[in-house]
Image (cartoon, rainbow, N blue to C red; front, side, top):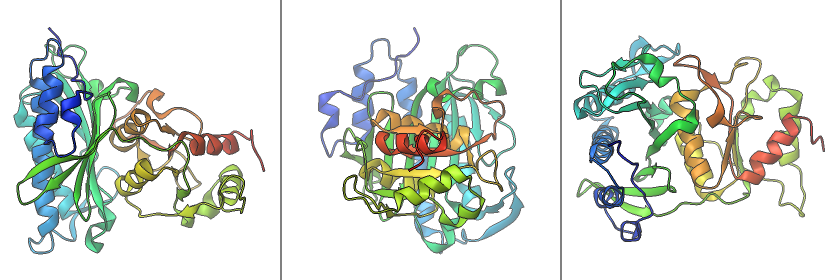
Length: 345
């Protein structure tokens, strides 16, 4: 019997201080027909994140800062910590026995697991790698899909799925504390790692993104390359209006996982629009945009490419890029009105 995705609304598992393991197990027990494979997969993902956390904390002492001298499929220089995080995730997920296909932002082609399982896992091993050497928040982003034919031979095409088919997504933020934010389709929950024990504890149950916010997050350095519509939105959000709470305050870290985490909790909007330099957008649909869009929608927010829902985009290639706008429903809606010329004020 196919395993049902565990419900994360089990009352006993939503108490602050509950461990991630207890939370996931409670969901498994509440799911009719659950086999434990999905639960085991999440535990393996948690293990990989804890291993990466330990190296992030010691990077300056373990010769893991700086570049490897290699260039990845994105044409970007590979950081040593990028490579380490990627190797950890590939190894842990492959050995879990639950993945048929594994895709990484750092690898040209999807990896067909040596132990084919029921799931497809796609991830960005270390988001915000340009900030590694400056001790700014970085993170891991992932999405999980269920294979249509788990007993069949896995193929790369199984990774080319629209985000609406995601069954689980999450991210880890390696900041002042290490936070693991997770959704299996029944709300969004945040866990904080206690490094002394090596366990994640529930710290933010049932996260909800406010309907509107007071902050915007965008790389203003790209302003000269933006379309006239995006420039009008940018000017509008900085104008003074006591009636609707403008101007918004600007916050921009340059790590998607850090900027998105703040926006998820506090509301407002994160925007990385296309521009003349990156006409197709810069962020990766499968490894960054889809997982984040899934989490924001689960938390009551919204995520688009400026016009269309991110989760409805049909991928055509593994490393496809997209513009990304996510945050509070009201703020994302206002952005869309400017981009579609429904609003010009």
